[in-house]
Image (cartoon, rainbow, N blue to C red):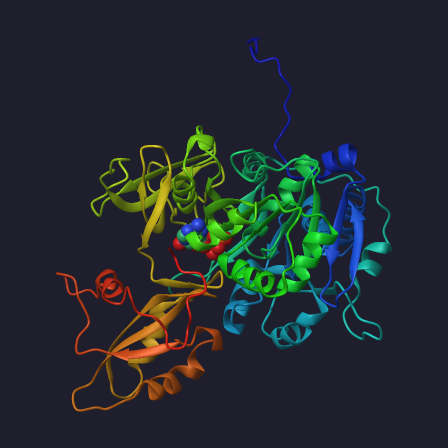
Length: 544
Ligand code: ADP
């Protein structure tokens, strides 16, 4: 018999242990929901765990089993949270659908994921009704918040209320899948990113650390990030780990947020810059205060310096986060380095404006076009690559890995790495524009534009916008002898793309810049239009 030298227990990293821990150790800690109809309700981690067991049983009764996909089309609230744990506890894979995708994309992902159940908010009913004929695999529809007099799909509370709460979570391996989130790329169909138990537990452990989100039991977190967008940045997993109070809101209006910050004594919040632009404008106008707020995490797009300064001048610390759906999503975060107190105001702002340092579990490097690793000297910039415990290996149902032989995943971001370990995004090599936290494909806009009579060539780039962070600018070359106008170009593409994708302006040039190999050089074009501003748009918060 070979002697096993190790003498410790096997304790698989499983996200269900997070909610079990929360129920046992901080069962009465509150989870608050601010609903779309303006009402607020309260529950607790103990109750979330209990109802998740009821839901797991209800799913089993519907005939679902291990690996089956359970989809949600919902904003942030307690029933959505219960579903995360209920679906996974039953052995399922939770598919959070982003309602901002177009109907064709929604049809594609529902069928590609082979969802069997869809749980949705009543306000999504028109969308769900329109999509039902296209979704081929969904057998059961459940509605979270049916208003009085609702006639239609069964109500969530009634559905789970019929079950007892004795369920034992289905056994799982650490590496079993738990979640699925689609991300729209530069062109073509969205790609599915699968999350696993182990990666998500490690992500949660990293996230609560002082140099990351700095979360503890006495805190109250309000993520202003949808639960369908990269796990609401992981907060619904991190909160039960430390037992902090969690506030979930289906409504992101600045007034509602400020009311919640005050009434619920929120200490930590997180959101994309667009959210904070609105909030800052609201506070400047009304004179409201953010008394309890200690820290805001800004990410999804670069945090503008003016925004960092504003929060600091109101006594609120800023954590600047960089991440991706493919990274669960946290990749790096600018917390406070050693020697923070000795840094000048300007130095602290400069530090925070960078995208921060990696937590344990993530590695980063930058490479040039030939794949050579570049120095971490703060001068060189190159393609940012990452690998780690919660980083994608391959997209859902794809054979080819999304990483190289050494495990490096190319992010499509261009960055510099500084000697102090901070990462600074300098550009983007992927052909996308990020508006209010959501992607717009520049290639699809260009393809639509060259289909318009009189347009010879088109290029689309993101231009800084004070509210949306970036908005598309379409730069076109006219066909010789043609006098096509910007309005005509926009009219020509209007029906081919979502309304919010439509470029904010069209400019004409004699020629577009190309690389030596004849490819359109977006980098040069971005440089040419670096000072461009959309007409009538006042800079409320500039990048500097
Ligand atoms: P999320 O919006 O949750 O970060 P996505 O997968 O939709 O996730 O987008 C990831 C991309 O967003 C990154 O590859 C990068 O281009 C951009 N991004 C995210 N955070 C930042 C940041 N702090 N600064 C600049 N760009 C960012």
